[in-house]
Image (cartoon, rainbow, N blue to C red):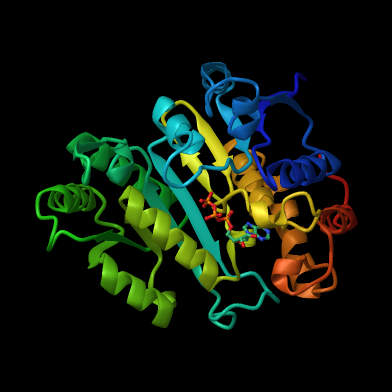
Length: 342
Ligand code: ATP
């Protein structure tokens, strides 16, 4: 049987370390893929290319599945975001970011067993990249929300919610102030909700949502929102369940899917061998499920849960002393203890 082909972008900062650890775990637990390594981010720029080279985009378009490490995006000036470019080029319109309490991991709601999914619109909003200076002292950014972009996001969200046995979808918005853009987003949400009456649908204003998330997060199930609110809320939710080192993500389009952690390239700890690879590993678990490899996905998930609950081999961000490699070896060893993987 031919091996599954998976595109790999190691990325910047801690990217190569956590990508290697993730691939080591996938291979050691029986996922025999043909890994096609591609440039993006600083490694591409150093070779005189753009942060998201056209050949990388075309390779992922052809392979259809990619595992991506974080790529650095400078604030203010500098190169444009490789992530934003990739999401737009491949029309990866839904960014799915689960936030789930792991046993043994300390966090403000460790006792609550949080299990949220944030679905972030991935191609529009202020990320449309329409910025200009009509005057040297004035900068403008245009927020773009379209009916088509919103309705496909909500169709996907209700379908995903149903497939995952979720009971409630809440749209997060600011339609009381941005009456046209967020108003359109909200209008399309309730149109989709009317076609999915088996799932409870409601809405919340983004500022109230943030307050509710840090006081009573267990009330939420699936949150769906615009690009910028989703970026912020998903980091907030990662913090609720123990930090960015644990938060996985998937960028989903009609034709392609790119799996990557919520966190960035963490330049402050890059090259030290201490990064937590869990977020990227759990992103790879989402990829395995996307590929129908549920047994292996379950096995790796169970191993991660065991490593966390045992607490003997945690990385520094979770209060432990284990290196990235030691953590990866522990996940593999526990996984092997569960028996051979087909
Ligand atoms: P971006 O702009 O790309 O989101 P950022 O610098 O704002 O990047 P991150 O790179 O996500 O944010 O890092 C935020 C903080 O979280 C840093 O202190 C970083 O060390 C820590 N962090 C992020 N990912 C990990 C990880 N996998 N393991 C350990 N610590 C991490």
